[in-house]
Image (cartoon, rainbow, N blue to C red; front, side):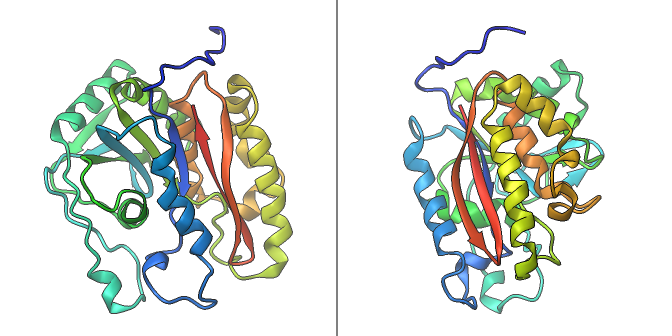
Length: 275
């Protein structure tokens, strides 16, 4: 393996793994009312950490899984309100970011070089794992964005390979964002008995992300063996963790670090940055 590169070009974009909250939680009343405030503030502040304004954004959302990696190809993607039972006004939220068909084709080419089969969906829109956090991070909606699906096989190595194939985009001003939740057990939210469970998994996840890249990659591949892993991400429901594998893979020789953590719905939720 090449020597760890700790001196990246100043204009090289990092990669992010962010929490996208619960449905449209940032844009509605909640009980308790300030449950999501710290997360919202964190997301709003993230762009200020960048070396410059991104030329484009590649978003990997936990809410899009396909047997074949798929990329949005529309110039004007519609929004997909893929949440249920929320107030009526949350189905009228707008995020008019443009798509980028040229970037979508470039991604397909990069994946082909890496022997990853991919295709473009010319009509698929942006799901809430994309547009909800983007409304906070980049509210002007003035950066061309494409979504890339996860592979529905839920295999960590597959998702990491996807990230590695996308890594070159970072030197072209493209920001890669993995959008999910570091703890995602729907039955556990709001249950105090799961606080220690989420803490234990979060401790492991943070130590893993902040370890040397080769060690990090191997540990993330074997994440299901971690303490409290399956209580934090139940079997066949780990899609909210997998965008982390993409973000990590796209920073193959760079260190990662925790950049946010909060107790939300009685569980610990964190965010990580690479590069």
